[in-house]
Amino acid sequence: MFLDQLKNQLNENQPLFIGEETALRSAVLIPLVQVDEEWHILFEVRSFTMRKQPGDISFPGGRIDSTDPSPMAAALRETHEELGVDPKTVTIVGTLSPYIASSSFVIYPFVATIDYNQIIHSYNKEEVEEVFTIPVKWLLNYEPYMHVVSVEPVPLPSFPYEKIMNGTQYQWRARSMEEWFFDYEKYTIWGLTARILKHFIGIIK
Image 1 (cartoon, rainbow, N blue to C red):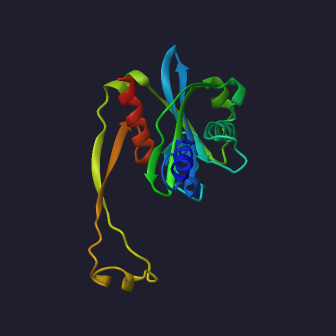
Image 2 (image 1 turned 135 degrees about the vertical axis):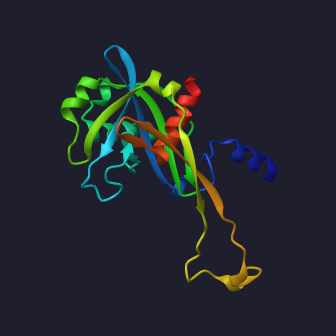
Image 3 (image 1 turned 60 degrees about the vertical axis):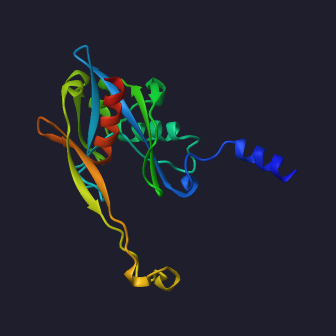
């Protein structure tokens, strides 16, 4: 009886990864727009007055609110708030695999087509400094470059060293993180946006 019940419970929908329910969850849109009859990807430059990451280049999107029925709904809502695009005019093309930045942070990317003419006249100047586009054809022929960042864990003073083997002499394992860079004209795309972009371009290659 116990095993049958357990089997049913394990076959039910489970989170993508352990900790997903409590992680900081965000959703972004990779916007495909037509410029001079050619497909481009649109990017935002975050307003210089933003408290977090001013001037960084990103896709439209942001944190998933408790009122959002789904990650896709959150991406559409954020795109509307940042770029002024009516969600009814957005066509979702597909979904990328979630990007799990850490056990406490996950991003759900969606690919969509939007009307570029809506954006250039209506984006939110309080959140977006400017928008620009890069031709898909250019991205398919570009080779991004990579730098490695070493990340070392630093426990807080309250960490219970007395409960683990070797205590304060415990050898924490540092990890290496790849940071990818795309240089286009005066813009440099890096960080989470570059990782998602690189994955997307790898799919359509």
